[in-house]
Length: 233
Length: 233
DNA sequence: TCCGTTCAAATGTGATCACGCTTTGGGAGA
DNA sequence: TCTCCCAAAGCGTGATCACATTTGAACGGA
Image (cartoon, rainbow over the protein chains, first blue to last red):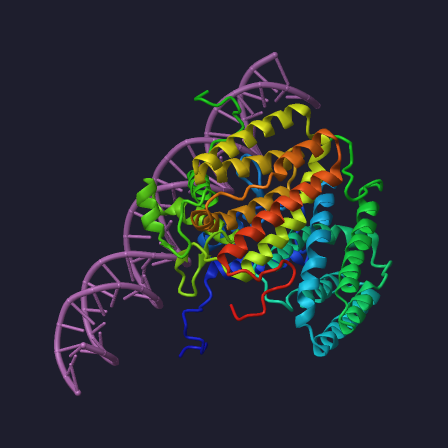
């Protein structure tokens, strides 16, 4: 009778709270790649003991959202061209399929919500609000994917976004938020038309076009998906 | 100077050892879905304190190889038709791509090794050695995928196999190990021919054919990939 | 015989501490 | 001024304990 009615032992643990906080920072690009983090430091910052932080960080390391150096130090992973290329590929393979599977469950009302999110997204783009844009883009994609209850595909995709997050920050700081080709509207139209192939294509195009644009601007071009850069590193 | 030359702090932690042990049990199907596991129980069984077990189990929960009930009890997840279908889809989307990317790095010597693994695999099939078969099949696929150093795709695929493992045990116990259509030889031929499309097709066929056969025999047929079963649960 | 209550055992969670290793910063020597 | 070295601080790891909650079975009443 404290505050929740759920009753069925659904109380949130502290390490879950910490996990969600760190995750939100990562997806929102509010952490700097390469920066080292420490259990005691995070614990002090979040006002908890090192213990829950340990569990949350361990989980993020397992999801490859954080990395551990050979000397067991924790840090936000740097993006390499190879990693970037693999992430694009994984997104391009999984997200259109997730969208296709969600389509039968998406209603006209869902499209309405997507339209609102997309409007906010463009507003953030106009005002140069990077964090807002990233959050809205995340919301747009996962509002689609989560249409179908998924235990595998959507968590997999979330882990990919988690790995992209810290990189996005750098990217948008560098690229600005200018290009904007609107595959989101194509996606919404495809949902209304119940056309799963068109929806998958719109998602695929959104990923490939956006990511390639970002990758080229950061990694000195010449990074074509499916054909790894032959250079060392 | 103790035993390893690496020197650079590469010593293995206890929770890593526990993680690898549990992981091996899961992939090898040496655990029973639905069975509850406890930290103290595992700790006693493995001769360590509950602490490293806690970290290993948390990691496996993060990878969805174990699940946590709402009342925070740990157990090996049961397979549902929906989960099964999603796992097939994820494998079918990721593994051919991983193979395609590995192809440029695979040598004739690698194919030789694959041939040896495949021979062992068929021997295990003949003698009805389920664990041996599962291990050999795992070795075959990942010997291909790991041709290319991968930080994203291969770990993703490993997590999928981890989720399949406990199910396989039941499956092979029920189906026997009879059907055996050899896409593995097609894969090896494709590697020798440097034909990435053919390699991807062989992997895809191996996955879809094998998995659909298994799924049909366990889930009372009528489960076609990409078209979720409409029944409740 | 069946169902509800109760109570002890067992569970995951979080805190705290000790340990070995790595990092780092300052001082001694050239 | 530069280099080397050593000591102190800081790190992740693992052990142990207290605690709230959950489980499971014995018990008593209908």
